[in-house]
Length: 64
Image (cartoon, rainbow, N blue to C red; front, side):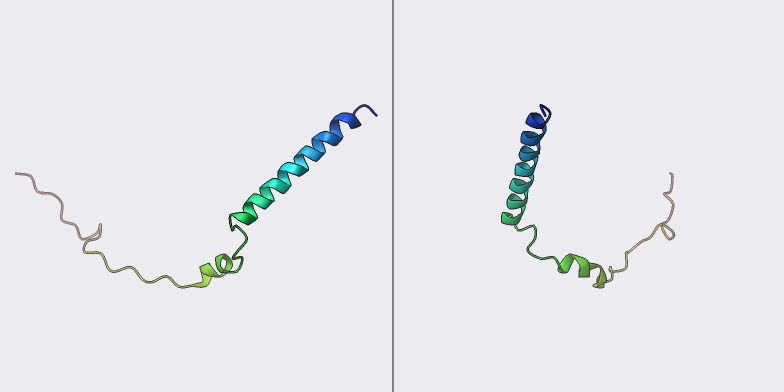
């Protein structure tokens, strides 16, 4: 029975912190858009422009 005096306030404290963090996240807009991140991987990226030089066609440095 004496353990209940320790565990119950501790449990209430943990629940209170969890609720406070949830309210903080809602106010900061963490749950505003739940669809776009899931669909973002389906959107094709624009191709990168070809680079002027690649590792294969670079001339070695000359000495002298």
